[in-house]
Image (cartoon, rainbow, N blue to C red; front, top):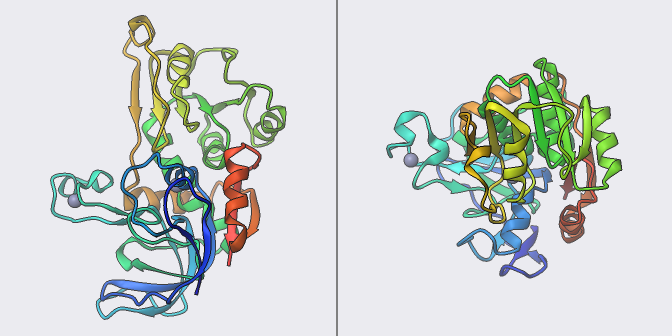
Length: 327
Ligand SMILES: [Zn+2]
Ligand SMILES: [Zn+2]
């Protein structure tokens, strides 16, 4: 099979011919139809996340068809379309797994990070972590739902009952979650890189009541804010924007250092928290909700061989919606 390989951090991916993987007893072999590109992939390429499997096939928003399955696989069938998310395996036995917090599992394995992912023609995945996908979505449109959607949804859930919701960084996750938030009756305030009027216009088209530069204060106080941009300086900015009791949710896996800030902007029971990974329950909930909204997914397609171009465009903030590789 063809695959785009990461040999070492801070190098471009390399197109390689690799043996097709064989599924283990609990695994399915999937012919990849589409794999979305996530900012986490960039953090792995840039060496900002520790200890990736190397060499590595990136990609944790995989849509494909099952072509082979191991002896212990149940509940899925050959020919079925499934999605494979970031959370690839958990131990089921640790303190976190036993308390409904498998996203924090000590032994967790992650697709496209500690196990090979979907920047390839085929991938294997543990069947217990595959999701059946709603029919309403094409393969390419379904792919970004699997991380931008799922982890975006967990971030939204942890923002609480906020009616006035700020979103900092309006990329793949934000464009999906803004639609869900609006459908839930919230008002969305979108913050972009200063001067990025194209993305601000995109946010308004998706229902944001206000869109502006991340350096500006919003026109009114917010009840919560989600930060998808990996920029630590946005944490004090968001704390200043939220009302008493407001929550600031950091939705990314990596962020630059957060500058020191006065206690006064945290005072008033404001909360700062991160979101780590996802649980399968988050995935099931979100995939039920997405077609009901219905969430429209903006994608920009790339050939598998063009994965480096997709990563560069993402790094430069030149994508509206999500880049999706199609082998
Ligand atoms: Zn991701
Ligand atoms: Zn565990």
